[in-house]
Length: 294
Ligand code: GDP
Ligand code: MG
Image 1 (tube, rainbow, N blue to C red):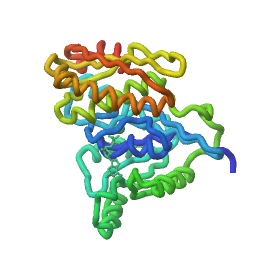
Image 2: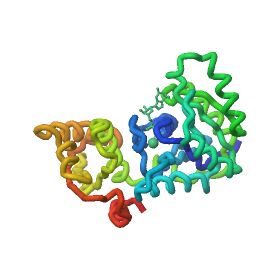
Image 3: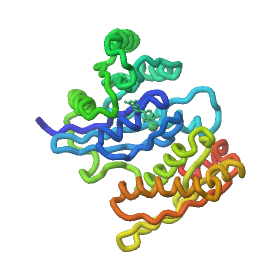
């Protein structure tokens, strides 16, 4: 067997588990995840290179409905452009939970003619195993996929089987990326995303999703990284939420971020965080472009 490689877009509505699945498939934390629907904003390639294959997973923001802000149209574009120029698609849906947004994804997918594997995620939550098969049949009637595979993204044996399924469809060709690449994004980008993840997780629903992170300093000092980042929020009231009582929230976000960043960079990290108000950035195309959303 020759070498196999290719791009695999992971698509599906927000919160269905796309980023979680991508991290589990490559065996490393790269994509950020949280229970909040708008966690992933940028497309990121996560690369798994083995002796016989290279899988390039394209993690995407989900498609959002009913909000016309510039940031939403950016995310929708990033999501639907990922259907083009890939070799195959993993479409993630959630067991027993079909929404309008799933229907929207289905609409997009009916136009593609590359292999599609439907992964029915979160079966660990479903309880009633005997109802899974009929549900898969209903799905199969909605859309003619090459495979329908029920799984839990957290279950190693499931992700292993899924890799086997992917290899049935991955083209035979040379690797696309150097074998030591795990992503197409810079370390700076990944680090800023990790900080955004901790903001989303720690602030839960108090936090507006209009929040962004800009890395101002990223230096290797001996064996240690010195990183400074600025957190942009929309309003002064949001700034005080992020900072928290006596600065405790920001401290916690800094600690959580540092641990994840140290795991990624495999080095000690000194991290400084600042919070700044930038009014209306999420609805301003120019401000978005200056923060890398172009
Ligand atoms: P995305 O928006 O599609 O990228 O979804 P995320 O990967 O950010 O996951 C959304 C939430 O679903 C997170 O809280 C995950 O921990 C959770 N999740 C993902 N996969 C599973 C799974 O197989 N089982 C369960 N119970 N939760 C999952
Ligand atoms: Mg995601």
